[in-house]
Amino acid sequence: MTAPTIAAAPGGLPVLGHALRLLNEPLEFFESLREHGDIVRIKLGPQSAYVLNSAELVRGVLVARHRQFNKGAAIEGGRDLLGYGLISSEGDMHRRQRLMMQPAFHRERIAEYSEIMREQIVERTGAWRNGQTVDVRAEMSALTLAVTAKTLISSDVGNDLVEEMQHSMPRLFELLYQRLVTPLPALNKLPLPRNREYSAILTRLHPMIDKVIADYRSVDTPRNDLLGMLMQAQDESGNMLSDQEIHDQVASILVAGTETTAATLAFVFHLLTEHPDIEARLHAEVDEVLGGRPAEYADASRLTYTAQVISEALRYYPPAWILTRVAIEDVDLDGHLIPKGASVIFSPYIVLRDPRLFQDPGKFDPDRWGRERIAEIPREAMVHFGAGPRKCIGDVFAVVEATLALATMAAGWRLVAAPGAVLEMVAATTLTPRNLFLTLEKRRS
Image (cartoon, rainbow, N blue to C red; front, top):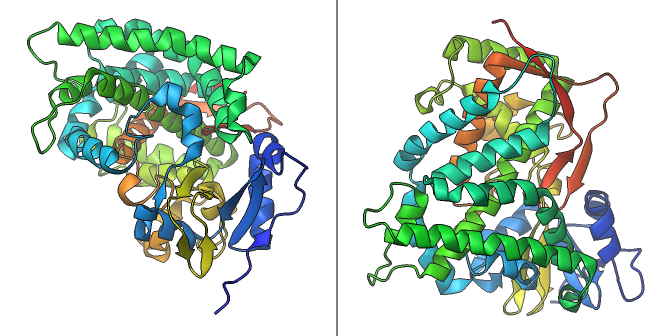
């Protein structure tokens, strides 16, 4: 039987192919590909890549056929930052790291981390003033970085590292995305201005991570935080992580554990300005459950509508909006041949707006995650944290953090948009809002 033909995307440029569209208008580009079928071939420089527009095909790559794919060449663009941490390692190395790190993300540990979450949320909102206008993305990034950093590094020795990450992170993510989508990887090695800027950030960042690890090594009693657990973790043979492996995990956790949750919270507050009925229901729940106090881990099971708002925001504006893989052998994917060495790209942003999976997908509707309707959502649609063995190890951590933060903030504050304000989005390493300035309005419950 002849394999079905894979449609080629129109509009490619000589030499560059579709790389400029992927760099300059990625969401619009991916949306335009849906009409060409569930799998579409694009050109990135001289190489072909295959874009998946079907949840079934995506799940096939992430779950059923995960052993036939690696993260691929795209991750090499971020190797100088991430090393061989959990985000970027492959094969047996990834499986070993995942098993060693998994206990640090068990629910009982997250319950302990929630105390840090509560403390940082209270500290951050305690500086808010009625009538103050804030850059919501920056506010949420400062909060989630503080939570991640204090969970990871309880010692004050990490303060300089946190300040550097706070200063550099927005630009770091923009530069990292440019490196990941460049049509010619050799461009990342040239002395271009963006490469020099990227190297300068890493030159400041990496020694700070090494300093933290050295400080922890100098103390006989292990600290009861995530870094302390990493330094004590052992694999099945009793081997521990080297300092370089720990370094790479610290960089990976700081990168992965900050901007995604911050973007989710920022998008939630934007969406609440557009949906006053949803905001009113959220306020009613947090007033009833919290009675004006900060949220705690024990409250999470009662904050059901708050959790639904978070789930719907993750669907509507998934921070991890693009994922890639590369075939390590010829793969038959639902009758389509993906040749060895070919890249596969898929966008949760597109999958999570597929009308075959969600009724009225363009509507922000937290009730679709309620007890009465959640069974309508197919399992393969749950891709906002990935799926399979490489599903985000911190997914529960992120949801708990976002739920507690939203509930505590909504209990005390409304974030109000100026009339006529228009959302700007940046689709880089993460999908995040830009110039989202909202005014703080103190609530009187």
